[in-house]
Length: 191
Image 1 (cartoon, one colour):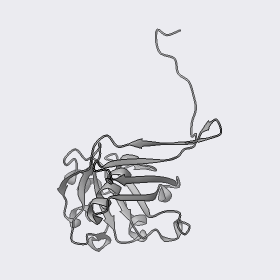
Image 2: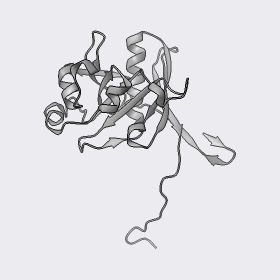
Image 3: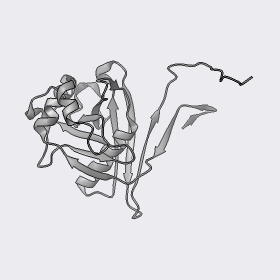
C-alpha cells in the first residue's frame, strides 16, 4: 500500500487454509481471561483453537465491556495452553461500543501471550478469526475491519478478508502502518 512513493501499509496472504482444532469449554476460557462464563458468547459453539498458519485459541465475548475487563490469569492460562500449537488467546466482540466511529470497524479484539502481555495488532489471529466467521456463516466471501490495541493505548485497525468464491479459500490481512522505531545495527565481522 503506497501513497505517492511512500509505503504506508501492506497486506499478507495467509500461508494455510483454515484449520479448526480443539474446542475449549467457555468456563475455562472465562477463567483464563478473569471473566464470568456469561461474558463468553458461544451461540452453541465453544471457543476453539483455529489457524491459518499460526494457531490461536479464539473466543467471542458478549460485550465490549467484557473485552475491556479481560485480564489473563496466569494459573488457568497455563493450565489451558499450549493446546494444538496455540499459546495465545485472541478474544473479540461484535459489540464495538463507542471506541469505533460508526462504520469504522466490525469487531474489537485483544490478544494475550503466554508472558501475560498484550499485542496491539495480531494479523495472524485476525485472519484466522475472519476465516472462522466466514465458515460459520457459510458465506463465500467476508471482509471485516478489526480494531485492536485500544485498551492498551495503542489502537490499530486491521482489515482481513476471506474469499472462497473461486473454490480455493484465500485469507488476507493488512492495514496501514506507522514507524515506531528506527535504527541500525552492525554484524560482527561485517564492515
